[in-house]
Length: 124
Image (cartoon, rainbow, N blue to C red; front, side, top):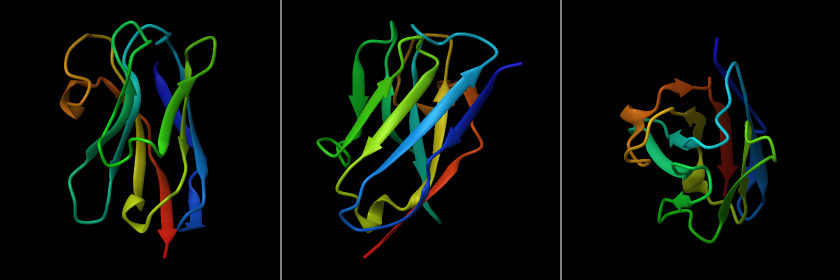
């Protein structure tokens, strides 16, 4: 059974940093798309960052480029999201996602597995 478990969320002030972690178990995703989405209250889930097919290329939403960095451990089954210069508009529940097929990494519908989410709150 595949599981994705996120950790690292919390309450921070604007300008602070946080690092989210997502540990996958049950199968390897080292060369498969794996990344992060977020959902703010009253809004739809949106793409944040991801590794693409082959596990090397990275993709970011325009709203987080230059502030967030996605990385993974050598085994490829733990993905991190380093979030710097956090803004109140980054407040959301952050979800880790993984997929076993190629396609559009920005499309949440094409991901096969999801974590339970970790809440990030950025105060102004």
